[in-house]
Image 1: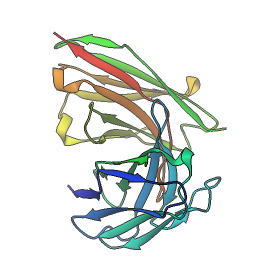
Image 2: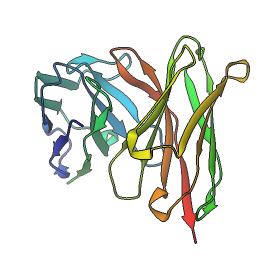
Image 3: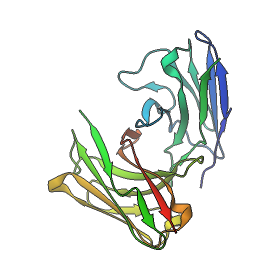
Image 4: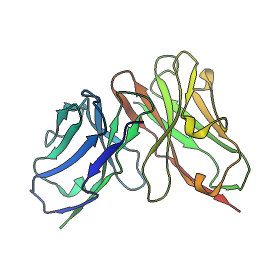
Length: 107
Length: 117
């Protein structure tokens, strides 16, 4: 199975900060990497698919980059409503596997 | 709009069988695939298995023969059944819509199931 190493596990930032979260795959997954936001008690929400494609309805402050094994989610200017857990998903090969998650809080 | 909702028990006894229903709306089960994913408390997400739009299924080998996924297209429902439950099966169970080469694009809120002795 492909291992997804996500970092950091916890992140504290201020409103307006630029925030980056990383996922590293144990082998090449091309661009088949998604980013999700999960708020307490809510369904996970797809933010970015295929490394850098913004899902419809997601604010443009969210962006993704990377290919192969190294990927980054960037929030260009953190907003209070962005407090959540973020996780990545590789969908290049079965079984699909997930990063362990990054809990983002406001400083 | 696309929605998925899981319904199932809060509590299941050790060694018993878990049954969860995923009811979908806004799309057809004959067009999209629906998968099951779980998340034990404080741990990461784990893919469990798939119901493909053609009616076939696939399972994570980690669950061996314990897991069964089925559907009723007339009711827009996908079913998860897992037997021989252990305490480490305590988790939040999610269903998610799968779009080819887009991964999971919509998820349900999940149902938290505790396995009790």
